[in-house]
Length: 273
Image (tube, rainbow, N blue to C red; front, top):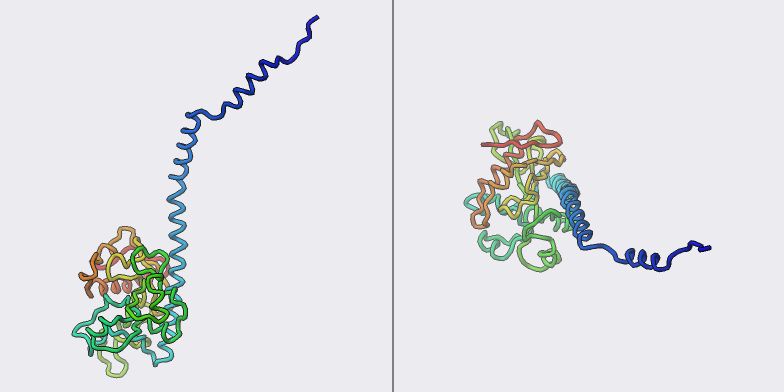
């Protein structure tokens, strides 16, 4: 009588087939699936990262804004001064240059001034804002990053450029002493706080603009708002070259921010034609 048992030859064949591993087709299919998943997830990750950077940017602007208001409280309501908007020094104002926190020798010479710290830089030199990194946006893609100026923040000579634009003044209504209209003023309590933006993304040229589809900006009422610009109209309005930077484009941008008083949280795309 023959007893059935396991055929050792059959078992060996099965093991050999099991040890054969993946075929080339299996590998290609797996790679295709992984690539597809990455293409689906990556845009969401980018949006999440940009949203996180935008929140940090908002925090930076708020800290700078609080520094400005603290300075004004100590100096009879005056905002930190800037050589770029002082008519006694310049034939015309240069608001496009107000991303400079510290003046270089060439700037000092051209403006016949010995002032070193300027605009937002005065907040740092006067200890209203003690961390230099707060003047730099994590979304900045241009050449003006903190590491490029770290030595100058620590005492080395030379210009310091930051990622946020400072206005230095604001529109006012009627002079409380003379009753006459005021075009602009550096006195904080003469400015309409709900209609005056004081800080925003850098706007000298396109490379200074931190967020392509909008800008965080600070108003004199301590609010930090997001100006949504998905069509990139504001970015497109800025020049591409520093030598082409003008006061007109920056002034128009400030007016653009000021005019959006009906959007308390998220400012929709709108602006002057």
